Length: 229
Ligand code: 5RP
Image: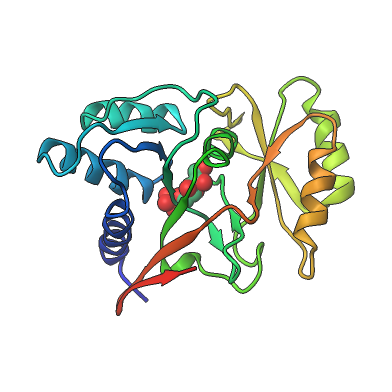
């Protein structure tokens, strides 16, 4: 198994491969998390070096917005215009590139931004590869604070093994002021049917299922970066 520092190097390597796809003048969706951070830094580095010009970033979280500003990427908020490309991490990557995202809490802004991107490029280290979604990570589901106990009860009828995410003693609050319910997925789950059912559940804002969205993934392992399509 890789030491933590090795994993960081791998994540950075995957990010650099993805940023190579960004072209001058692109509107770029900036993902969230410890891997997406390397992509944002690399875009900033390329802008500073003159290797890229005219980039506009659309950040998927307050944290990524702040980092983008720090590294010199001009940002705009999401509007109806399409993005050329978005680069983001993932919590799980299935063989068909379906994803679980949202352990970092930014799933709603990520999904809203990334559905508008012509290309969604995923970057990760090899530990994120799974044979089926839910194998390792829970599925984050963002829910309104209002009536959250009722929403949690409804969700437990669908996914009994799950709990409200906490930071210490307090429920975790997203950038949108909502809560997150983290649910274990049973094996043999039809994730498309699940997504429809969850999206039809009162109080649910959105889920961390990113189905059929990713164009490719750069997955870094000790023996090199693998490109999955
Ligand atoms: C945030 C996300 C992240 O992309 C996901 O959690 C992966 O993060 P990391 O690169 O830190 O492992 O979905 O909402």
